Length: 472
Image 1 (cartoon, helix red, strand yellow):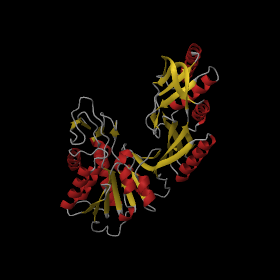
Image 2 (tube, one colour):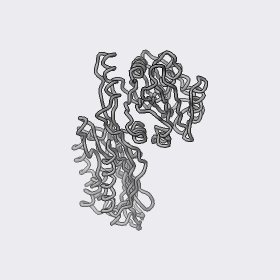
Image 3 (cartoon, one colour):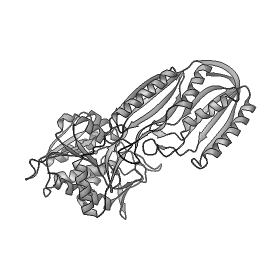
Image 4 (cartoon, one colour):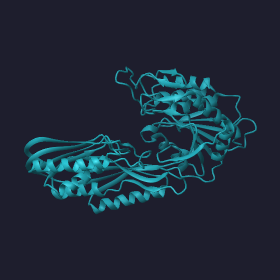
């Protein structure tokens, strides 16, 4: 394990934020070549390193060890680190490895370090190995999607991008982005300019927390506007909310023009008190703010278009669509309206779609195209990445769970996640690939408080080497 941590430190010294892959990619190739291993990288800076089977394992299926090279770069305000040219400085506190004022990058640097340590060992029995280090995973699995899978011969794959050492992941969601746009023309209208702001909602990750009943600020804006539309005359200038399609939006802001601001503000305040009472247990931090900007002439949305915007927000599909019948508690298919944006001549709605089945994802896209058509909206989809479908006959999963119980005296948790892993890309590109995902316990990933349990990393490294010995 000492060698794993040394290699991790060496990786930390190389800048490797998403989009800055040249240095770390070249370093990994150089590492392999100095040890007489076959190594190559492609235009996306993905690295493939191959090591021959040890004696007695020549006829065993090839095993892929996989992790990603990039990290999410965050730092405290006072940190002098320039992520484009500076490395990460780490320190140990008790059982934890942390970084000085930045993200640690154990997601997924510790995976790369473990694999490199295995590749240079001469005392470990194992089948033929293919170490695959992908790039730009954190910004859309871009490297994996560019990788030529025909270069790989592996029949089994061990991904090391899980973050709890007692869990073995066996399925993940695929996803896509869906954007619908409501076009409009503007007209001049005199009145009082008002702002209505919602903030303080919990938000959250649209995969991990979509089933927790958290209020979507964009949809709440639609509810509010529909109520006010039936109560007090007004025109809509803009409506905006959220900033990431894969995050449940925490805030929304509406610009209103009305000829009767007193009546509008009175009704709005009353209705929002009712909403706050309704949401108190679920969203205790919810705050609404009503502001008067002033009188004048404003270029508002034409009424029929504004009505379509409000209708779209009131009726948009959102949240859990299906729960899994195979894995209790797993969200199988869902969608999230994450970004609501008013441009000069259109309001766009950005959805993040997820499903653990390709067919479920396709059906969800078809549903949204039908929804957009009813509202005479433009629609498009993109950013596709495939799901990793659950495999009932996984010998690799069964072998790992047996070894886990033998080594620890406890049962591993077999889980599927409603978020994306690179296993989905590899499983889609390599027929009949048997995959699992494991990894050490990490805390506060993607934040400056990120830390890794050293004993947990040692545990996973031991299990990984034991697993390779059993892969005959």
